Length: 567
Image (tube, rainbow, N blue to C red; front, side):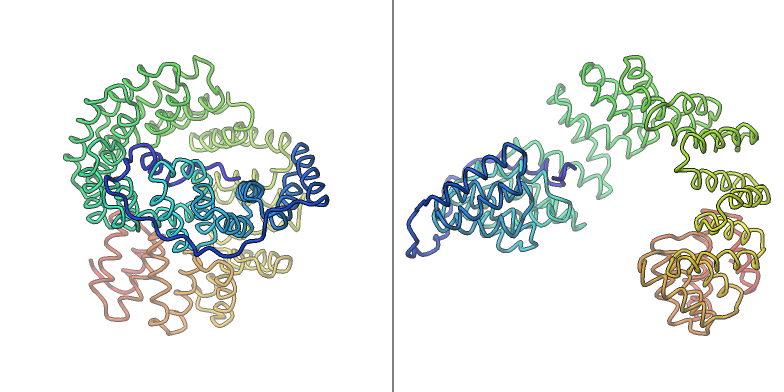
């Protein structure tokens, strides 16, 4: 079963908890016309099946239990047995089986709330939202919004796409039940997910018209206003909500989030302090607040909470890891290293590798190398990745020759290791030694002919040098077939097509790469293709944007010089 909180969790809690029955409920949709149904009956074999099912359940062999219950449901026609089988199929995520059994259940009991709910959930999982809407419609019409409370618990197990389908199904019922504020709230969430902020605001306002005390809708309204760029209004309304319910931590957490997003760290820190003081024993909440502050750049607040949690003995290794990250963000490499080296347990390897990285940046290469060597003995299964990481550290700190030497030594013990060969190829390429680069990439492809990274690297190298262009295109095409949305491979395909004299064909690939990863190299390529196609203003904009982010970007500067362009 999935454990990640669902997109709809908060929405459905509000839907179940805040709703009221409409004053003039809609007439229920007519049930399916009655038909002759077989009588409920048991025989000796069925009773035996049920005994085996119960015995299997006690042993936690739930799929065995499911098989016997499903057979008993088909033969007894007993809605009690059918219901148990449906619930078990839902729990086991056997969606086709659950929908079939829910259908049998509804034949016997067309208005049963559990049967309608589980039928809707199965249809959502099976990507049949229209059928799900029919079941939810009848559930509301016959039982009212209270019947959605069990749906809340089940919805927690849905993944993001299934949650979105359920949200859409609920949204579609707003006109049929216009006095149901929670359905308008669901529509607001649905519109927001589709980036229709105006539609979302209209729907959430309708929800609040129907139920002014709908707390979740009020919070959602402030989020929508913030996303529309009306930050002061959003923060003002949220501040009022917090003032009206000073002890409710959910509105205050939402207020902290918006303050941090707006860069108002002093006010956010005040609210974080209040939350921590209001919930001194809720260490999980305080930890969440610390992570929120850390992620948003409110270092002082984050470190204060993390230090307090560390003193209380709460998850000490995680606290040290995050305190190291906070110190690193402040530029305190020495302090960060001290924290990282004290981390034990499952986070130790990550923390010590980061400590080594900082040691290299501080010029303490000998200590860093000793640390990495020690880690390779402690974690021999991670030795390859550790050597590659250290080579990257050396190259990143201006010593690619030393990185290459390190990889040479690593390959002496594992001469055919494809990861080490690829890393050495990239390092050699960075030094301009394309012959050595090509030799290592060819060795990788001998072992792994369809390796997309090696195919792309070799194909791009040839394309950039203007050699073996057809062969380069074939290699890049094979890589792209495996990873069709990888921006690096899209860039390579665009570049090789351009070098083949096909700029019109190159442009779509480069636009897609740029949309995902507008780094200087991709920007240089896209700008050049736009330039040769006569779209000079667009080319200048692409190059200028890249230079705003990286004023000395070598790929851009080289392209401008070669094309004799002045921005």
